[in-house]
Image 1 (cartoon, rainbow, N blue to C red):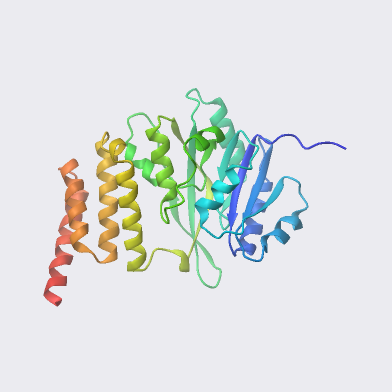
Image 2 (cartoon, one colour):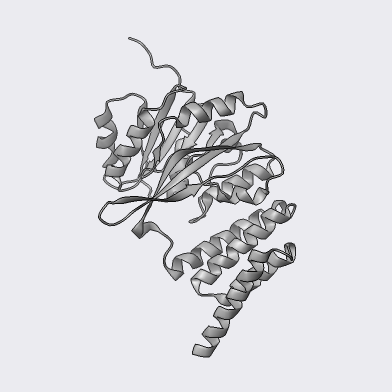
Length: 302
């Protein structure tokens, strides 16, 4: 009986109540070429319903990992990190998909690039899905790693499409399970602060899907986002303050979240802090005026 070759890459796919999307996600991974791989599906469904999806593929590369504690995506990913076999790890959300040449391009980029990056990120195609299931391409997200390019673009990196050395993410302690938002942004800052090398593969290789009911659309959610970003900022403050671009952008991000939550006062506070770091940033000045105007209207209504 032939044994399966040891996987070079481990794909981690946390899933929760999205079996139909999970099937499409796994199909997109199983068609990948360029390196031996395994797929670890972490099932957080209370009734272990994803097990039948995994078994339906009858492919030994797909491993089922039950996780009865529904504690969020960070905990699920960390649970899988302790079980993987690959030298490299990639994260795919259960409702997203990989383009056909994702693994071939990313794996060769990591192993052949002269800088030998510790983690890389590729471009994303962004789609929306309405309540009737209709998909619409909304845009694209790219990050550049050209020398001298502003470091604050690292804030655009999400876990979807990330490709890392397994030893690197384990050394960083995985994802912060206390965060309900931006756990991937927190991880990127942790890796950068530890001196790990990041590079971007400027190709669109990952398909990300947004659902109408999953977007940050309520003021309460934006407030939670602002609090999470503020926590991340304080956690990495020493590192962030070494780079004006990065520091200013993160303060600006917190300000925008507060503004969208309806807290114009806090938005102005963080907007001014951002502007203090980079005083002549036109976009930041415009935002401060917008926040001030919003606060004035709020005062007039009261």
